[in-house]
View 1 (cartoon, rainbow, N blue to C red):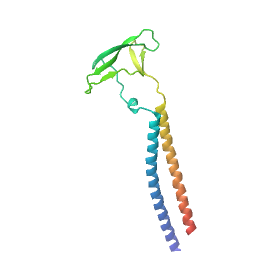
View 2 (cartoon, rainbow, N blue to C red; view 1 turned 135 degrees about the vertical axis):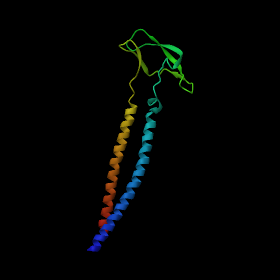
View 3 (spheres, rainbow, N blue to C red; view 1 turned 180 degrees about the vertical axis):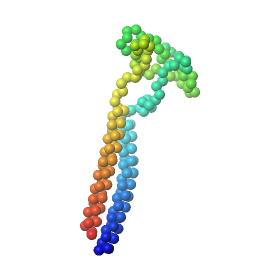
View 4 (cartoon, one colour; view 1 turned 90 degrees about the vertical axis):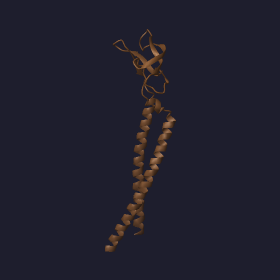
Length: 162
């Protein structure tokens, strides 16, 4: 009787060790696979992360020198306004020419001042975030399922041999 319980505990320790090794291998495979899938989705979506997370560049007459002016028509207004189209930022050590972003809408505020307002995004970034959340949730669920299935197979094989 004592040898049966000893054999049973040794068998349970072996199964636990096998499940631990399987879990580590599975986790490494999922990390590599899901990251590769995420990068593939990001590349396939065409989202330019440099453009999305870049600092917005606006002309500031106190620290910039205007090189070229252009006429812009504010949304909902009939009269165009003259704004700086290209400028040099004196704080930029590269000395590159900064340009007015074409995606920005020129809007005249209730105070009479002109503001730049970003247009609505195309939703690709939100789709990428949703796909990432689904990848993570699906990977966690699949990993739990595979580990439970492996543990059940090991237990069934141990019962068959016992």
